[in-house]
Amino acid sequence: MAEQRNASERHTLWIVLGLNIGLAIAFFASGAFGDSNALIANGLDNLSDSFVYAISLLALPRSAKWKRGAANVSGGLLILFALGILYDAWRRYVGGSDPIGTIMIVMALVAAAINALCVWLLTRLRDPDVNIRAANKFSWNDFAANLGIVVAGGLVAWLGTNWPDLVVGVIVAGIAAWGGVGILKDAHGEHHKAMHDDDKATKDTA
Image (tube, rainbow, N blue to C red):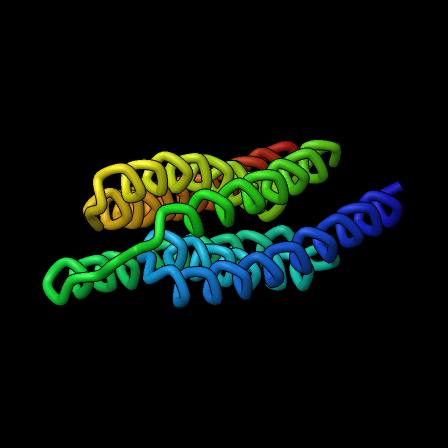
């Protein structure tokens, strides 16, 4: 039964990993062409997620301790990604940028559909471990960020200014940092639960 569940989780994670790598490439290309911090932020987010999904795939057949360690790496990567996006937003704020609103909207809508598919695939898995829960959190965060880019793209096209793009980029960084902290807390909770179960088992055998 456990082997069947691991096989199902592995298959789903491979699909989600491939979709996120494709999205990262598309975000980088459209962000560079459209001069958009928000699109590049989401590209880095999806690239970070891809590393996390790869770590999760490695963690599936391993011990609970290894899985908690993998989740800690995942949370740390998200926080590092958030810092990088904040730096890029500051650089564009100081140096100026000229984002293209229509490109932002189209790319965000395509990405939102793909992220919705990832959420659906991940929520079908039963009794998810800490890494699967982390992957699901990433997909929900990405979906929310995509909707924010649609709004920002509309404001950029309407107002002819770059601040909505920068604001959404910063918000995406905030969502990523919040998600990273949440994953670290989840892994910490799993660690304490495991220690409690070990202490209980020791007392029962004493």
